Image (cartoon, rainbow, N blue to C red; front, side, top):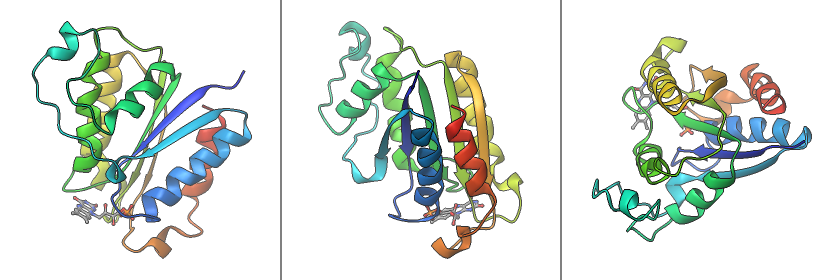
Length: 179
Ligand SMILES: Cc1cc2nc3c(=O)[nH]c(=O)nc-3n(C[C@H](O)[C@H](O)[C@H](O)COP(=O)(O)O)c2cc1C
């Protein structure tokens, strides 16, 4: 049976390398009969977590009524989560980190997400440029009890054209199909 997959894509650059990589995963996932909801987090107005703890008192309802609401709704129905981000100064983009922090609102009630995958683009010449992002992803997955479904890291990217024809696009397609 098809799964509900949420892709949180954190690049602010529209149609950039991260969007192309996320589209390849989505294509594979949809072709395999899954339902994919993809959010470009940088296009939404989403405030940073205030750490007020009200979501715990209000069983998962965040005090901030902003672009995070539809994401929280989809995450409550999701089986699989995919994070996609360029490396920005060794980490996720701020626009994705904001969303990750705001998922705090889901901790008390929990979700039925079982698996998670990661897509990373970076300018560095080797996968090592993505080490911090990979490590953060694995720590979050471990904390949440998510099985690691797979990771695709694409180094050496600056302009959009740099990702065209790269073999990692096929890896992302296959990862999507196997989610
Ligand atoms: C603000 C900023 C910070 C970046 N920091 C890094 C970095 O720390 N390591 C790295 O390898 N690439 C870094 N890059 C390069 C991007 O990760 C890379 O070009 C990526 O493919 C951009 O994704 P996009 O095409 O979706 O915008 C940075 C780019 C920007 C704009």
